[in-house]
Image 1 (cartoon, rainbow over the protein chains, first blue to last red):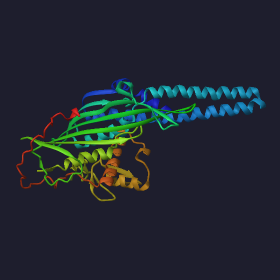
Image 2 (image 1 turned 120 degrees about the vertical axis):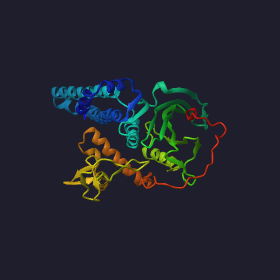
Image 3 (image 1 turned 90 degrees about the vertical axis):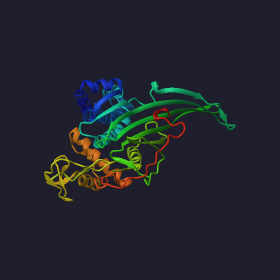
Image 4 (image 1 turned 135 degrees about the vertical axis):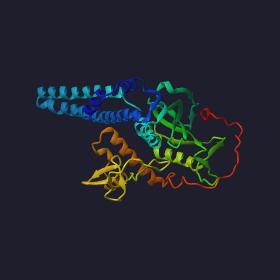
Length: 288
Length: 119
């Protein structure tokens, strides 16, 4: 897998290399070309993640074996013990170096698990040569550039334990853009990631414990503008999400908002519920 | 004869490509893009994803080139979406004539703006 990752890395185009450096992308793109590039990066990122996991196991096992072999072999053969230690520790250090290299090129999981499949869904609704106006940010949502506020809560005590919390707030817009579907419906979308990192310090007597919790809200702002040449308002449309619908002479604008909440720092927007939200917005109209 | 596969999620759009073969499972006409080989027979992409679900094997286990891999992943996701929500989009039969609806005009509610990105 590690070899596969480096082979893929050698095949990167200049635009893909630039994206890996900045982790940002903005502009108007032919959706099929954009997806081709992103899918390759997604597969490379998956290979990188898998490799880091394997390297983590290698480091752990090497260090454990080094410890036990030192205890056992030192009595049998100091020379053999020395050779074994050198090999195992070198293996652990080499793996750690590779892990560091892979970590530097790591992309946020949102890209592979949400953004790419979501763009794939949009592509199937568009003309083959359709273009997308897109702003994409593949940085970790807890990157320091997204940090906008911090609060130190007053300490709470129940008589035995004093609990002090510091909450750091982050806001990232991983994906926003605009496309036109093959039925001339305009679709505008914005995904915002609001994360909180809560550092907890608990003191009981002479003991202090530290803990870290996470909270995340992923908000989707969606807007579909249907042309009146193809669609009309569906008064009987049964949707289970609140919508704001406005009309003018040429079009019907349907706006919807969805929020997903999670307690994991690496939680990603769920794809099927996001698609379902757009499907619900389509129910506000009916085709002519 | 055209391919009978309907693509898309929000709208079920007919594939406009020429059909070159038939699915061994469901019998529909399919083009080259929507045909897949499994156990020595040719099936449509929908039957292929159903057979993959039944066998429990993953599409990612196959050695596809990137474009094909991604396209097959899209169909697997589409199949799982319909399984979860049973929520099919408009198809050609929906796009037929009907009597015009009411002429109600909707007024913008107080505080509402065109730019929804402010919230």
